[in-house]
Image 1 (cartoon, one colour):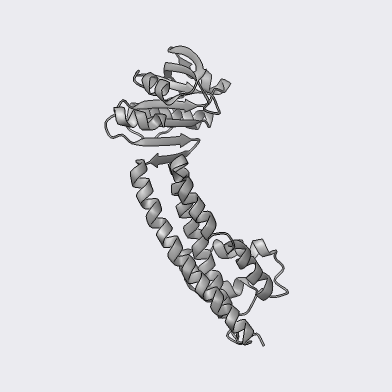
Image 2: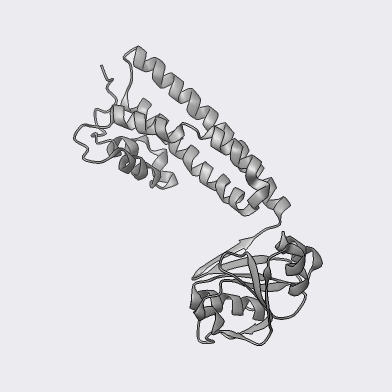
Length: 262
């Protein structure tokens, strides 16, 4: 919520979430606050030019209006002074650093060599809803394929490509879930309802895929169920489209894999 206030106020800001000795060595000037965190206090302090130092758990505001002096020899891809400082501090201390640009209202998060740009909540929420709709569509397709596999099992007409088709769709569903989760994490509290919907959709997906692998993987495959599942999920998008790649992971020779399990 504090960051939302800063964005609305168009003040910009530089926030370090961490008070390790390594971080404090880079701090110069400013003044000690030592109070519990609140969005209102955070917003008011961000109106000053300097950086804000929070405790490692983000629950206390320690310093405000400070200057940060990281090693200038650390390479940075940024151009603005605030963002260059943020990236260097993050790389030098491996601490979470947040930079908010005053004019563009862009929030950029740095930690170590990682950089991630946050979008406005309404934009993220729109993308999350679109991704959730895609997940629901793929999950519906997976349910149909799983039902068809069950029917073919009862008729003793299952082929490896039937099995591979279900595992392919299951992997697509799991990959799509990760995309939705990324938006949910970014939304924070606002993403709780979406998260509940995703949890409901994904309730049995992983276990069902493991059961199918257990039933149909070759007895001589020499790998644990989770390892087989992970191998499938590590296939590139192009590789996943080829069912023969999944058949191979299950431990079978592609030639002759069309034959039925009867």
